[in-house]
Length: 297
Image (cartoon, rainbow, N blue to C red; front, side):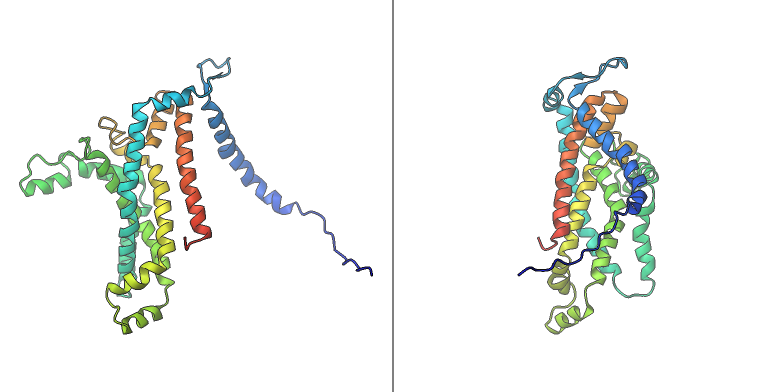
């Protein structure tokens, strides 16, 4: 017995959607993909500063040089320290702020706006302002002088304090951004759950431990990954406030790439460092992708 085949209507291929996508794809190709491929190839070559000659293939020499570069390992340590110092606070503090501003009180919108204002301020403006606050005669040291500490604190000139002072600016700048993410998650939690918890005796801050934190777990993981990626790419704060000093103690990987590429004109070595940074960010992005697909991980 023969089974009749269904008539399948064939339509011509529609190129119109791809024509709309073509300008954006072309722009990505020119500005992202081609430079990325060139940077990858430059990691295995050495430019001889002669525009008439192609770069010399050196294989893994740049990577061997990287292993022996004490400044690179110091910048990598500073970047890891940045992750450890910034990410936990940017996961916890914005959640506390979001819980506070999620209450239905008169004028609460103004508090939300006040916490979000640092996000829209340019990092250049914020860095200059905080640098003035950190100066020897700045507001912070003037307050300390009122309490008897006449010498003040060398916030940006001390090798032990410089990177922590820069971290504070990053945290201040990111609080409002992650607060909004948490606020969206909090407003999606049904109020009936809190009412039921209150009947069972879970009230006050206990209800947040029993209900809010478990239901906000996907948002907590998402903020942790996003803030980790941002911390590995920090540049503006360091450039404006310390320029990597003193003694390279506040220099991060991204700033080191900028320094080798645009100040020392060592393009090939800068591409090698950038490749390592790319692998780190790729790993964090992979975690972000996993969390986005399965928030219950």
